[in-house]
Image (cartoon, rainbow, N blue to C red; front, side, top):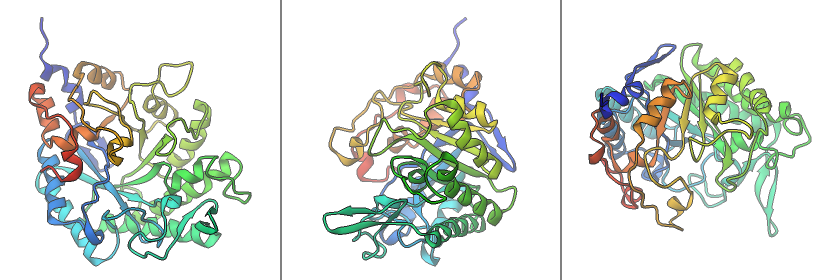
Length: 377
C-alpha cells in the first residue's frame, strides 16, 4: 500500500506540551539574525514577518537574537534590543500578531560578548566584554569581565526574561551557542581565566548556571526556559565544548537542574553523529543525558548545508528545497528529537510547514539571497 507524504509527515505534526506550553506541532522556526530593526526597535514589518510564519503552520517561533540591556551586549547593526519602552512595545506587537495567527513565540535573549567592537550601536564607545581581554594592535578591544560585570550580565538576562513574561511571550531562549558570551565561558579556548569562572569544566559552567538560576528565579517555576548550545562556533566549525557524551552530560545536567526546560542542540548538519563511536546525533545524546525535551536543528529542508558564508555573502547562498519527510518522521518516531527547527528554508517560504503538512512538497520555495536582503512575508 502506498503511503502519502501527508501520512508520512504525521509524526512531525503531533502536539507537544511542556509545562503550561502546548504547541500545535513539532515544527520550530530557528532564530536567524535579520538586521531589520533600526534603532533596536522591531517594526510593524517585523511583526508581519513573524506572523506569516505562524499563519504558515510553524508550531513555535524563536525570534532572531535580541540583545539584553548590558552595555556590551550588542555587536551588529540594526538588530533588535530587548529593553526600553519603544523596543518592548515593538516586541509586544510581534507577540500579539503571532498569537492572533494561533502561534507561539519566544525571544532569543542574546549577549555577543567578545564579538563586539567599539563603534557598534547603541553606545559606540563601549568595548566588547568577554571571559578574557583581547588586544588588537595597541588597543584593548575586549575587556575581561570582572565579578561585578558577571553579576550585572546575569541580572540583565533576568530582567529581559521577566519583561518577556510581562509582555506575553510564551517562554524565552538563552543563546548559549556559536561563540557568543555564554558559550565563550563554556569553551576552553575562549575561557582561560584562572579564577572561579575558568579552568575546570565546573568553573567554566559557573556563569551559565548563574544566568539560568537568575532567570528561573525571576520568572517563577512555570515559564519555559530553552537553552541553545552548540559544539561549533561561527569562527571555528571544528570547535567543541565537550569531547565525550559524559562531558556533555556534565554541562547539560546541572543546567537542567537549575531550570532549563528544553535544550536546543545546534548543529550544522542535524543528521551527523554527535560523538565518535556512536551514530546518535547531538540532539539524541542531549535527550538521553538530561531527560529533557530537545530541539534538533541543522540544514533541514535544503540541499546545501549551513555555512556562515551564506550570510557574509562570501559564497552563493542559493539552495534548492529538499525535504526527506520519511527520514524526519522516522527520527521523530524514534524519539531522536522532540522538536525540529527549520532555518533558511523558512526565510524564503513562510508557508513551509503547511506545505509539508499537506504534502505539497512540489510547491516549496527555494532559498536565495533575496531572503537575506528583505523580510519575505
